Length: 370
Ligand code: G6P
Image 1 (cartoon, helix red, strand yellow):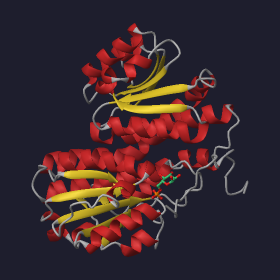
Image 2 (tube, protein in one colour; image 1 turned 135 degrees about the vertical axis):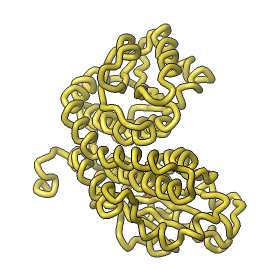
Image 3 (cartoon, rainbow, N blue to C red; image 1 turned 90 degrees about the horizontal axis):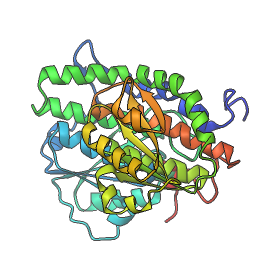
Image 4 (cartoon, rainbow, N blue to C red; image 1 turned 45 degrees about the vertical axis):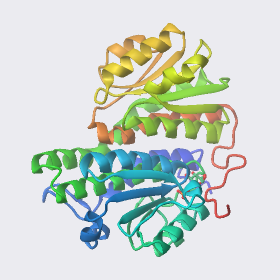
């Protein structure tokens, strides 16, 4: 096992550090920047069917569901196809409206999650076209799907998903951009700008791992005894906040909630005092001014702010208690980059609390029963 961990203390840390490679592996052979194309057989072979879709329904559980939410933002933004994101467990039990014009996208790292499998069976019976996004090759969901794309994250051992999540975001970005280009919603120039940026993401992730690791480890020390955490983000980074909170809950057993930053005033603000740590994802692009006022509101109530901002940020950085700097990227790809320090934060808090990071209590890597 020590050899498999490649010198890292836990699989989770190894997998966090593998992300430049796993994202690159997921892009390889698909993103051809020099030729200005995205090659994806799963989409290409069924393009007519997919383009006729009146609606895309994304079905998943856990971390994969968070990836699905970001997928909704990506696909609606670039392909302009309406998207709904459903928890597989809710979808399957509520007599959902599904027609032959729907595309159901199942996202699953393991490809074996029982609720997700049951949900796509139901959707297929009703005539929907099933597109699977799985990490495990030849898994049940992958086999059952009409078409699909594999994430090439490699085996993920840590129960808390890290590299599979960013690989899912990578695939969803490729799909959204390919559809957007094909159906004419994205101009050639815009498409080229975005794929060039997507091509840079593995490098940026590498950079973030190097530049934030030691500092995030230090921050983690200060929060070992916290009992609650709030994670806030807007737009594309709202689901990234949900995922940040989930990582912390899963492995450190600290109660954490993710929220869209603007919703803070409808509830969570009541919880904010000097004992409440708030992780806020605030890259320059994406409602930055609004986030600035959210941070002001938090500081007025003495909340402890851990801000994830872009290099050289001044406004949020001047108010935050801890400032984690990440490189700038397009708003749509920023969850990939911003997730890295949040994974590290959850990891180190859990390690300092003496938790079993790779095998958290009560959780399974793949939930194959209801
Ligand atoms: C379990 C795992 C999570 C995972 C979820 C969905 O709860 O602990 O990490 O996100 O299942 O799994 P899937 O394999 O379908 O992505």
